[in-house]
Length: 259
Image (cartoon, rainbow, N blue to C red; front, side, top):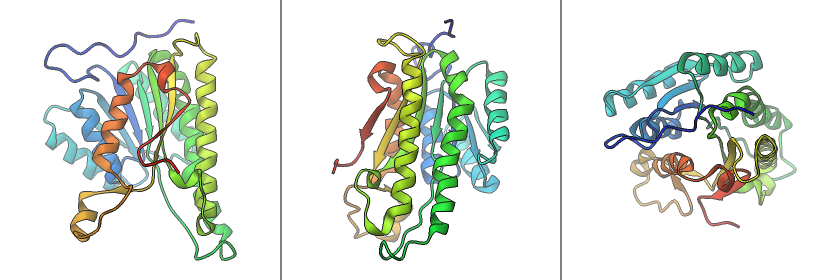
């Protein structure tokens, strides 16, 4: 099997992802904005997508301004449309010659006061947001990530998937399914090359919840125990390219204490 060269080594004064092309799905929220900026600071060309065109544009413009000269592009994409998602992946690879990463940040939450009060309409919504989008992006980007030779598929998941609570049945089940799908992708990567160096890696980053600067301003006395700052999450995502594919492929990396 022939693959493209791995992420080019950065020259002096350049970022560690100089020459890499990373797509970010669900980039319109605070975690997306932080991730776009951190990847751009590391030298990557960042191609962002979100269903909310206004939030996406705000993040793209802010990150371009914060890191002058960065190539940050935003495309409104309906990730529930498999054809549109494949078109986004194909266009990204065609326009830039490679895709070194897909970071999946599409989120959503619904819960109930008790297990008996669970509304299955919540499951329908979360199934689309948390599972369908993972299926569509992974199927669309699997080929480009393998061809890049050092690709990364990154899913951000929740600790609740490992220890679901009564009122979070739909959310935890959806997150667990998304994790299982991502780990199946990792097995596909493992079988696409030698065990010691698969051509790409699929990794699950597990958080309890995310905290932003705005949340801290709104609740200055809150401790947010176990929460992961969106900027710390962005740095952990960037660092995945520092480690060998075999080391991070098919792994759950906990950014909060493991239950």
